[in-house]
Length: 279
Image (cartoon, rainbow, N blue to C red; front, side):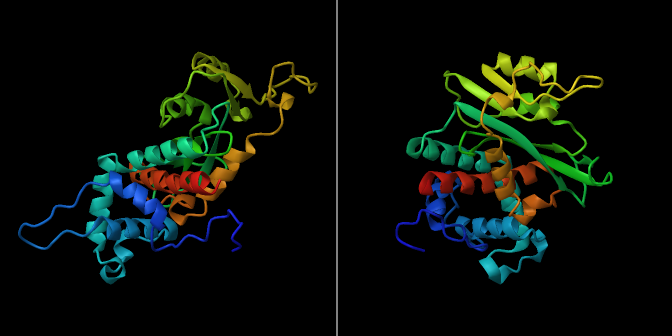
């Protein structure tokens, strides 16, 4: 890689990048020191094991102790404890604050979209995917800024329509929204009066692609849509594509939706960090 290049290097699948680790370790619970019994595993070894599961999609019990110096049972138990304590939420919030200081969050245009993924093991929060022969699946619902940095994440079953989860997505934005004028771009799956009303109540100017109804003429619809503006939703689709590179996200193996959401939050933290550090 040339010295003038700003492209991030290939990420190791077995170790959290050093620059990212130095920022996320501040938000992990401190490991107790001293006392009787075997000393607890260091947070770095545990996070490296979680990082490997995120990229490889392997089972927790498939991890050998000598790989990271921590057993699979301890690794899974620590991961679930951190999820319940909100550690992964704090990590992605810290990355968003870092991104805001270095690149400034582009609030003017925000974009939302979702991606369906298979869920072979089922579990809570899954449903029959109507686009995949009614196989069990889940959806990743994402809201990003104008560059594609994730601002809010939500997960639900593949049998749910995105328009019923717009409120949950907007209300779960991980940092405080400013009061400036903001535009929201959505595709035609969100074209309903309920979404239009809620989006306007939240202070957005909606740009929702119009979905032609039955017996409606094919002439251009006078309803304001994204045809008046250059294409913008592709940055959200690109971010969803980046998430799909991780096998634990491309296929939902977690039976608990909160565990799957925690892995997505960890992946989004890396995406935001790379956007903040490399531009």
